[in-house]
Image 1: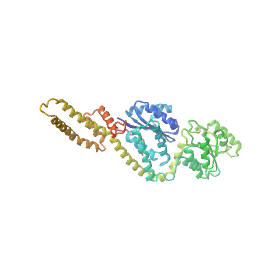
Image 2: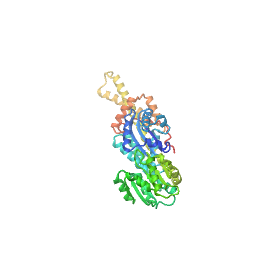
Image 3: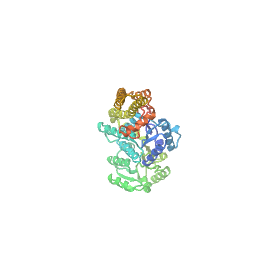
Image 4: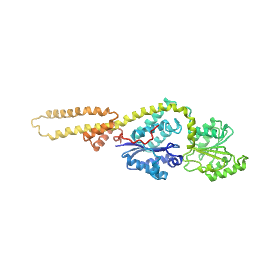
Length: 464
């Protein structure tokens, strides 16, 4: 039997210091998913990794064993004890796991409720796993349904009004800290990816003056700078830019800090020599929205430096997104509607093999009885024997007709009904597995999908 299992950490359960130790690049996410598939019980795997969450979605056999194995892999990745990591991990199963993914994709679990970027991040994570051959029928159906749910939420509610995003909130934070406008500010953006593009757009909308984009890949940085009226500098020229900067917004995908404490200390000494400021050093605002972090947290110890990371943005978010709160109930209704649709699909994965096994059981009994009485019909003609067999099969079919109807229309107690039928008729796991394969070949059940238990353990991830 297969189950859905999710393991994850997010800004709701773990600080950035832990999240950055579990952050994956796309290549690392594929490598980790492949490692999960190499364990005994994992059959399909997709990894989502963003600045605010790392989540692993799995199709597994024994969910308890799979959870322990994958938790161990995550703990090894983070270089901490599994028991320590378990305090921050949530691990919903089956429909609870699906509901959590739906909420994530709809932006209901985001730091900025309704943010649009998560939809694309979920899609890319699934496409990468699909391309690497790490998914299967159940995970593909799950992610397709989750993306459709996210699309419904954004098209049928106003939860995404205002185009708020982590970068835009970071720019709002810069405005609130510095006061006034950004027109006369010297701004440096570290990175040239999607988040940096959103940052540059938000800065441009706020009238930012001199803007420089620093990145290892000059072509990407140049394209971004040209679109928003900035200039490009290489990372080797970064210290000189930091000497002149008022604001630094960083969002690279570097696995290691780009701005270290000792290097920034030298920059701040140079700033003190070049600027006649009452404090002795012109203030420098650093906003690091990367996970893993681009800026050494110890930089905050330096005089004249104000450093904010992704977790520091949450207070700004709470003040600025009250207008979206009224849309959450309707968004949740859509999630619940789509979860019912998914649950019905899962129910079919449970019931079809059982129905097939039940009918196979009936046919086998008819064959057995006919075989036991073979040779006892001395005066019966071949036509008579055919009629006896037809009557026996008709009786078995009619006897099983009502149970079949009840199984197909099972409701909330469907799993219990299925288990009862299997117990009453002695339908063992071997017969169910064989019938699942037969049903799959006939197109009734997706390839490689076994009956899915509806039992789940609340992991806390789906709570509003």
